[in-house]
Amino acid sequence: MPTVERQAELPQPAREEIRIEQVLAALGDPVRLLYVRELAKTPMGGVACGMIPLPVTKSTRTHHLRILREAGVISMRAEGTRRIACLRRDDLDALYPGLLDGILGAPH
Image (tube, rainbow, N blue to C red; front, side, top):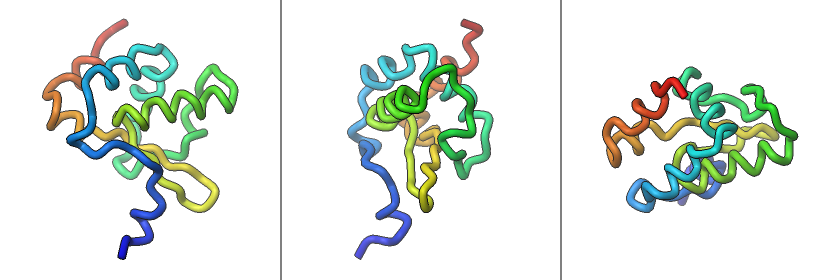
């Protein structure tokens, strides 16, 4: 029987299903890259989706977060009416060592 926390997770690829072309495409958008850079600065437990300001509407934010989640860059879980986003750093570092650090550290 699944745990309550597991039931609250939104659909996302398992580590072995994450593909580099999807990760790079997701991070290739400036708004999504901004979100991931800010998310990387937050605590490991994640942050509510609306807490990181983005220069887009709520519906566009939702679209960008879905792209990141489906690519395996972030995970999201429901906590009541909030959605908590976490960077999947462990998975990305295991699959593509140094990639995330290089992207996050790039000046442009």
